[in-house]
Amino acid sequence: QVQLQESGPGLVKPSQTLSLTCTVSGGSISSGSYYWSWIRQPAGKGLEWIGRIYTSGSTNYNPSLKSRVTISVDTSKNQFSLKLSSVTAADTAVYYCARNGDYYDSSAYAFDIWGQGTMVTVSS
Amino acid sequence: QTVVTQEPSFSVSPGGTVTLTCGLSSGSVSTSYYPSWYQQTPGQAPRTLIYSTNTRSSGVPDRFSGSILGNKAALTITGAQADDESDYYCVLYMGSGMVFGGGTKLTVL
Image (tube, rainbow over all chains, first blue to last red; front, side):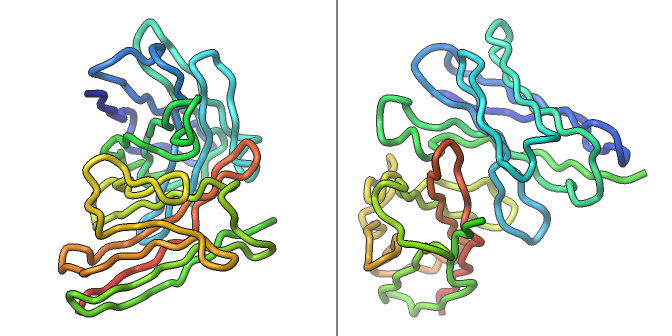
């Protein structure tokens, strides 16, 4: 079955760019019809959707983060990635990657598979 | 900007029934928002419970059910168990994006 694993630096300096990768295993990222999302959660707080990408490269972003976010996909590596620029301490959070359900099914509007999450701290 | 609202906290007795809700700061939630529900325990990734208002995700017991109640989406847990004590989040699909509610901390005692 499909599994997701986040990876990337655990510490990023303020004003720099946070970069994370989500590796898909147990299936091809480009098989089927799925969006692939990034979600984050500051310590002790709720979840926030960052954005998503379709395997065609089409993206949607949270309007509050749109100016700083880029999500891309590398089908040859079975990965999709997140870049968040000009980070501040407010971007410190656990970052999750997740799969949205089948594009041609009502499950497309939900997350059906989650990674375990990776903690990113923004600090000098 | 429309905010997705949830009760900050709720408590239920073991064996009891509880209904958590998911609303909008402006307007009503309908099936067109494809409400989904997630359970999260401390230190763990969320687990998908319900999608598209009332469809249970694979492996989710039928103690969990989703619906629209009035102008809100609702998650009902019947026969609450100790391990249902978790944070519960709803998500609404809005246009081309997805918005989380603030979450409800459910205590079973």
